[in-house]
Length: 270
Image (cartoon, rainbow, N blue to C red):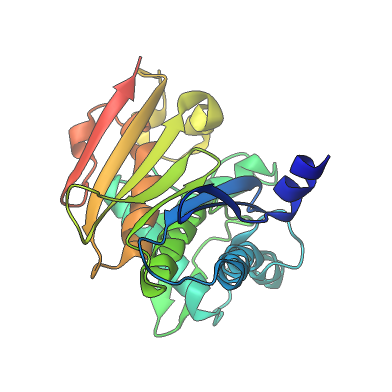
């Protein structure tokens, strides 16, 4: 009973001398955060609250099931009208556009309309337009889904918080699909890992308006992608792309057509 209560509330528990583990609910999964203070004084309770607030912030912006999220409010206003969202939402759109281009259209948030059964086919993310701090779609996608990129972005944001707090050794995981960790063999370097399985999204392939997916037949059961980054890099961007590009790798006839960032490697699951 006591252990179950600690899990639900996400209390930090000592796993070794100066080692901490925190489990937090958020974004439809359970986050596991592990770190070692390594001689530094870190307020675990305060840091836990910062992590929880950051996860909640991403949920409040990008959730496609929470009717009060920023995403749902923008969708109800109509996505063909010019709208000025929060800087975080606009950043998510630009990251999605980069992933869309790097995968030649195979990663596409407009498939949210198919997931939610409001359109038979996705209109395609190429319909988006940007103007300063505003955006619109030429054709209304009705629903968007950031499930393949928002969680990765949140992992990167937590990694930045950890570094700013003075952590030098940590490992964060979001439900096992997105991970961030320090590279013990290269101080100052981080590694981001993401995994995708065909069974989780492969059925959407038939609804993406892309000629190479008309007769999509999966070649692999899943893929693992790992990308290295320096502490000075934009960790939110790198982690978000690591998450999103796994979808492109699985859907592509030739994975070499997916434009990976530097220092990235992948491995397919049979």
